Length: 517
Image (cartoon, rainbow, N blue to C red; front, side, top):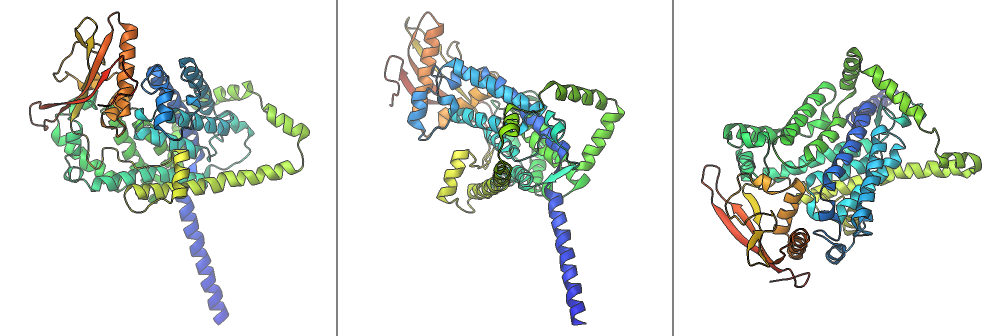
């Protein structure tokens, strides 16, 4: 009797453990079609990001720009960047093209893991070359590409899929858990920052953000005066990010619904706020949360409207047009040693398990440290710094931007006249009709604001030196001295313009490279 009770109890315990294990796995498994869509989205975004950055390649990534190598190596103690091997524009252009080629390989799924590793390394290198133009979207981009290395991205909708004999439709691993938790950690950490803000908790945050019209564009300029809608969206967004753990807790259609709510909010950001690719990068990460039932329905819909067949034919042609085996594979086949498969298998286990586990623990600690819950041990900080994986997620938190901010940079010309050498126009101290248009691109706005508030005042000299050189290269009448001014409209949403002018830096164009007042 006692033995029967023990056996029955053990069986119940094992059943409960099996159920809990299956439930846990379900929450961290990802459909292979979601991984394929994620791969295509990441590769496409890398290409788009490169194209957008290339518009100001000289200004941000060469010795003729705002951060020449002399300044980079002087101000940053450790610089691990392939983009820092030369300050010449042609070298940067070559690296951009190489990065674009590997990103395209990701899109089509050719040598997917290699393409993903190289894409991550080149993105990391590019970000290290000029940290002054980065935002939260860049941090998320790096991390999604990093976690993508540990995911089977090439098993569906890819050239590599022809070499895959597995019948599985989903995958659950340390890598899938890490990438899902990465997206969740961004929301949770940001939510904690925002709960410490009276502005966010009162519902006025978006009202203030949309008054900073250096951030708004398209529908954002229309919404800026719709205070009731903005307050409503503030409460909706706060509610969503506070409920973000449901992205993991829920499954099937319920997970799809909350994922779609997040996607909708980010697409709303994309057409209202000039914050670069951040909304689309986040949407790429959210694609992973869509469960198999959604992909089954999407596949059925695609088949019904007749797009599945031409897409499959196109993929088949692409698969036939590239070699089945690389030179390396052929070499291993011909001269490989018996020990090689064992070594490769062990290395693969170490790579796909130990590395992501280590980084996942450190990333969790980094996020906890960002909200003052703990501290990351020094060795862990070193690893995070090397991988550029330290995180804080303070986007618009705890206190959101509420002031419109722009620059005026009057320069004293050789003919004793004055001109704004930043905008290439007459000097004006009035608020621009559109502050957003006073910056050429989002990267220029980010750089200008980072320089304005940087702890390292050397950046003001670097910026001033660039403006002097740019003006003198493109104008017959040179500039002798410039003064950088930061202007801020401190008016509340219902008030008239109240402009404050701050003199940031005075610079002699014929003087030393770094000039301090």
